[in-house]
Length: 137
Image (spheres, rainbow, N blue to C red):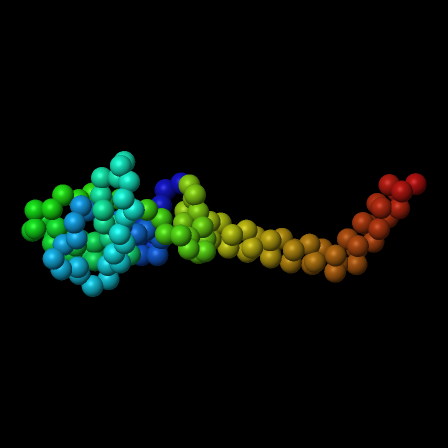
């Protein structure tokens, strides 16, 4: 499904986080960045992971790394939080999902109101009761 602008904003703001991997830490780490030391393994290229929850914090760190001529790589991943499946359902748009639920509730309300008005009509109710009696016999 096509994501709306609101869906993309929700994902960028609350769901995605940027992981930046480097060989050595920069001289200065901008505010809003979490630093983690990676375990030493033979297969691991990078020693440090910086996690930025906002893109402007990630951009500040990337600019700093470029100014220091450091090698780095970035990955955008989904956070490990309880609310992520609700804000970013797989292959679905949250906005359209909510819109269809609202349309379905409004339609159900009007259909139930119409059925209640039919049931409140004594002539229709008598016809339905007679039809039920015929079907039982």
